[in-house]
Length: 284
Image 1 (cartoon, one colour):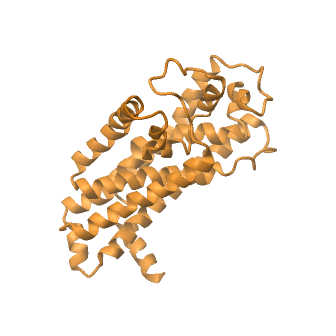
Image 2 (cartoon, helix red, strand yellow):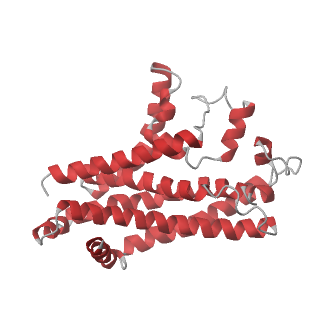
Image 3 (tube, one colour):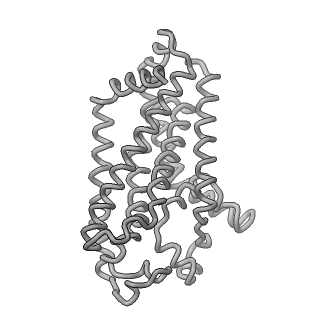
């Protein structure tokens, strides 16, 4: 345990004044509240109070104030936060490894006596720390906005499982980015590949799989599973009442949390396993 603490202290010294860490962390902290403000403005234009007291799917179509009150706020902010995590925090998973490969500090760490296992453990500790930071900020935002819009905290304890789900979503994207960084090794190429896969190839692969293979397998692809850990609540409404089914290129389906959470955990461990295997086998 003392060794792990020592390794994490070294990592903290590396990154506490890193401009890229400060920039991306700040962008995450800025864009999450801004996205909620945008949601408030856009959703507020079509708000309806007819279903504000509904507990089921129709309650998710209630007024924007009801949507940003407990317990619904956990899911709405979780979905909005997943975009900020994907765009900014995911980059950190790549940078923490590719920057050290390109600057030869990875090699120097091994030469100085650090084993590859210890080096990997330190990096996983950084991923856990980043995910914890993002989750704490998400929780603070939800508590603040939920209290404001609800006018109280009567239902604050409902759906608290959204907090560990948000943490798992962060670790999922970070682990994927980290594994990609170790495999590709160059920051620019890895960052481009990350964005291209998340926003272009993964959706395209889902569509091709749906039309060429079967109607269910694409819902269990890694990034789709991680997305379904913190989905947009309205998607469940559309799925239940049948909205957008005909227009969508792929049928709308959200995995239940009892399925998406274990699978997301499995995929996260798989990404870390791939990263460790490449770190052990490749020349540094």
